[in-house]
Amino acid sequence: MKSVDDYMKLPYKMEIVEDTDEGGYIASYPELKGCITCGETIEQVVSMAIDAKKAWLEAAVEDRYDIPLPETENQYSGQFKFRMPRSLHRELAEHAKAEGISMNQYCIYLLSKNDAVFQSAKAI
Image 1 (cartoon, rainbow, N blue to C red):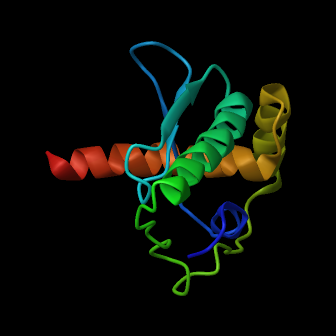
Image 2 (spheres, one colour):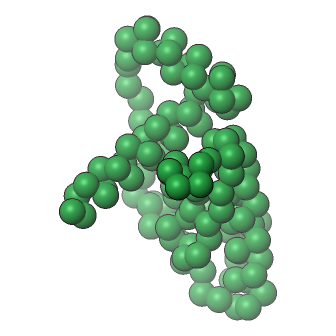
């Protein structure tokens, strides 16, 4: 069995979606069933999601629960590179700054949000 710190270092997938009913955002870790939280801003929900993951893992270790490993641990690096127009780069950087987060976090949010919409549409 690994320690909580060992599990915290693993690349569990965090999903963030906009909460259209209550406002703010909802974050979850699909591989850690029931590990979910919410926040008013993207920055806040990311921070709260990390705290929720740690609390979930602490409880799982304490209860000797079989903690699943990330499905993508050995399959994907978590990185990809692409070029974009300078105007889009500027807009993304400005939007991220307005949210008080890095452009990388902002792009992850946008990708997660649009992927969730895609998955919802696919289910219909």
